Image: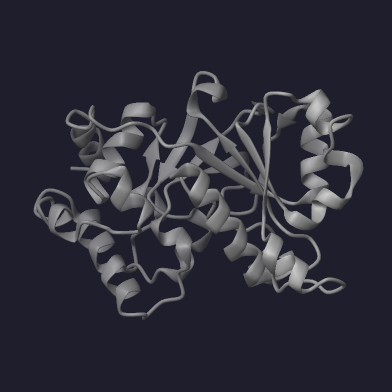
Length: 259
């Protein structure tokens, strides 16, 4: 069976799962464009050579630019969407990890990322992938893959064996994976209206009038503004945090909101 067929099979027994929010991470300049256009736009992806909009299911794992270090003077902003606010949920693709990191995962030659891709997934497909890899949302949020559950499908699906070996390599520290290897990537090929439940910003941004009652909050009364890193940022007044610090603080805040 194809990996996609295994996911669809599992979706039949995943009705007990709710959908977690979707997360899109960006930076200040891009966010300003989103605010002005009131849409989150698709952009040309160097991996797929297509215009795509990326989200992660239930986690703020996407790292803009190339590395977290680029956040030093341009810290991350994360939009948290309830799935119902994305419209018809017309997804283009879904992967169990980040497509951009695939080359680092040391899959056997001949295995392309398409072997682990679900084309045109829907709400049930997402639940099926969670059921297959993690069994439930709580384990997914803890990065706790169920290798025992996955092993049930080795004889029926060759890519399952390869993805198990990937998680074993990660657990042994043999590859540089990051949080994204345990994060479900969702791709859209159409713009999405700017109507997130939360916008999560660094605490230092609150010093500008952009976010106050007469500006952003007045224009978007249904969007809740949350901030991260108050204590750490205040400790370093006049200095900037490292990119890794921004990333970790943002992730902690977003995960707290989702949980």
